[in-house]
Length: 114
Length: 114
Image 1 (cartoon, each protein chain N blue to C red):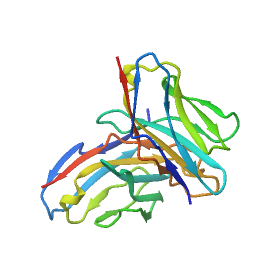
Image 2: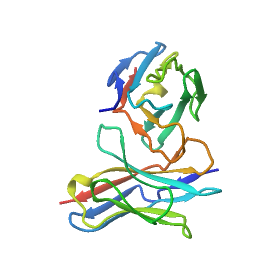
Image 3: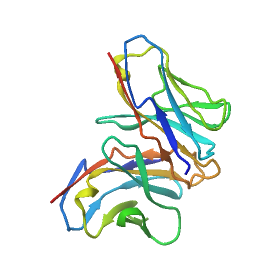
């Protein structure tokens, strides 16, 4: 069965370190998204991609970057981790041909920055 | 611009009673509306969507939602709640002809009491 996976599921890192969160989907979806979820804020979009070599900033992109070298993967990099980036991160994907398609979410990565 | 509101942070219901989780939206054109559920320590799961046609949409786990254009609402319902329905529920909207980026509500925590 097709799926979307994230790794690691839990990560503790120190302030100032670079961290990369992996996202891999086997749906063959063109669209991929990164969100963070914090109490009181719901889901906030960090970056998204409509296809290979395409990346776009979301509403909370400062301090984060992504690259899309193939259809299956959209890794999220925190250039220099800050305590404000402690959060739960979700990757999602959807078909790229219509806005009628739902998103499929990964299980999440809980990141703690100390 | 598209927006969605979930006016209740929390809904409490007794097991066996009907439940309603409210969602209202705002778009310039025709809406595409989605409901997702999030169980503890899991990613969001798609429940159902309204694209066009019948205003009553049936989805997974016995849930249904009613699209009401005049009231710009898309409330999630279930005739008989189960304790296992306790979770966080998100409403999302995209606009016909708009981007593939949905706007999510802040989420409603549903608590079903035995």
